[in-house]
Amino acid sequence: MAILKLAVQKSGRLSEETEDLIRASGIRVDRMGDRLKAQAANFPLEIYYLRDDDIPEYVENGVADLGVVGNNIIIEQQRELKVLQELGFAKCRLSIAVPKEFNYSGVASLNGKSIATTYKNSLNKFLNLNKITANVLSIKGSTELAPSIGLADAVCDLVSSGSTLLAHGLKEVEVLNKSQAVLIAANLKAEKKELADKLIFRLSSVLRARDSKYILMNVPNNAVQKVIKLLPGLRSPTVLPLAEEGWSSVHTVINEGDFWERIDQLRQAGAEGILVSSIEKIIV
Ligand code: PRT
Ligand code: ZN
Image (cartoon, rainbow, N blue to C red):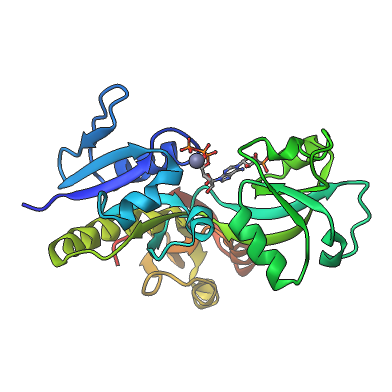
């Protein structure tokens, strides 16, 4: 029987959330100690633990069928891989930053400057696109130190909260691209594709649930129509009579993103006793 091989980061920023997502999808993996390979107990899945930079190559040459990496690595390595699913974590952006006293007036300010980065392909592409001639210094790590030690005028690095830049007296001036963890594949044979689809079905039901909240509230009957208009719901909200005459209980699923705004509108429309809870999975 076919077994799906998934390459994930061994240890780093992607590891914990990848593991959580697999677990939340109902797949049990007992990783023994520091082993490089583990097998799932209840799904035909084998997991390889690798350095994130190596994952695209392993997927491209078929050693692994699927991989979880930051999209930034796929862009940087310029590989022809398919993104099967965005996973919603490890969100960051690749940006150019300069010392805060640098008089930056647009991308032309980078002409003739030196820029330190571990993302030289992405940076060169951006500079070419903007017709900027700069000296790109390829370094291995701790990019943010480059300006203060006189190595470069600017840096091009990943940013998430921005606190690393701030701590090193740098300001973000250009965003080259945005990234998050993604599930990648090359060309899958039919039976692997079928397994991959099953895995994606599970992952996406968990991801959808993470973006949503289940809410229920009490609404006077004369306000029910107004409240329903404010609520999307998977199909439409559920309305049940309360034991107390003249009142209904309205249930639905709403998006985490516009949650607070929706709650305010619902209260104004007459909803009371609003209960909110997380959802484990949404199967559509
Ligand atoms: O050992 P291995 O090669 O597997 O790991 P690694 O050290 O190369 O990668 P790792 O674990 O640091 O990052 C893995 C992936 O996480 C990256 O490829 C990105 O897709 C994603 N990611 C998300 C980030 C960040 N956010 C991030 N903030 N990767 C790195 N950073 C670094 C950034 O380089 C900078 O030094 O964090 C610092 C900035 O963070 P803020 O929050 O201060 O802005
Ligand atoms: Zn790496």
